[in-house]
Image 1 (cartoon, rainbow, N blue to C red):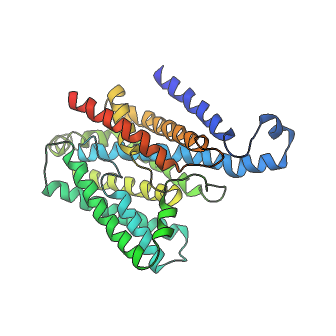
Image 2: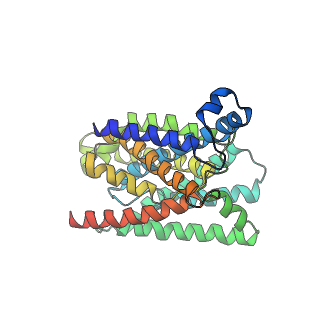
Image 3: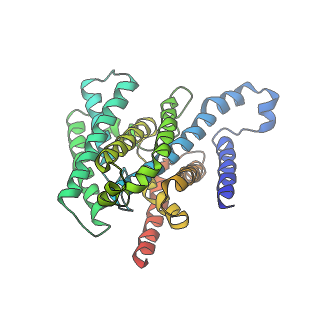
Length: 315
């Protein structure tokens, strides 16, 4: 019953997202054949709504996988250096291959994200900590170091404004022909679902996973690869969105448990719902102007994060 309610809420928010914006759209005019309204609807509103669905679900699922790979509820691509490493990769492409196609940019971003995440996992083995907050704190520090390197070189080559504007989480520029790479996340969902049992076992630790016949190291590398690829795609298409990969998996696990095969679809839907709500708020709060959705996600996410910290501390 709860799942049905989530699905209906998602459909409702999708409908609202399609008809909220600077240009007023009506169903009557769309069916009447208004060329201008159909152009806005099919060229901007549908691509934007689809990109919100895919980005929200992708970042939430990536956070879920990262939390199982590290056995820590506060780790996500934004707190493990994954996103910052991908940004460094994008800067490298902008410096040395400024005219490179999107596929090359995506591959380099994925490569840097993968290597950065593996370095973070290596740091977690060198600096073991029982405190749940210590691991994401190490990840944030590592990400800030990588981000500082990227900012330094961007400043040296006068690319700070270009990189900052491009990588800020914002869906206002999403249009037909500029978001289709996000469809790559769909087969990644399928692969993650097929290996959901193995990822769940990995979440119990190396000793138990090995006893149950799961190759812990290879599954960890495989999971990091999937997360890095999905995170790089989202970063290139719509920019960086904070907190989503931490908050949504935690909220879902509090209600539905930690079995990935059961919670994966719910996590994806909940992530899309949360991002749709934030994007709708971003469009209407100072209409006809628009706030970057990353700002709204950051504000709401920080509030929810404090609530989660309090809840986890009591439990």
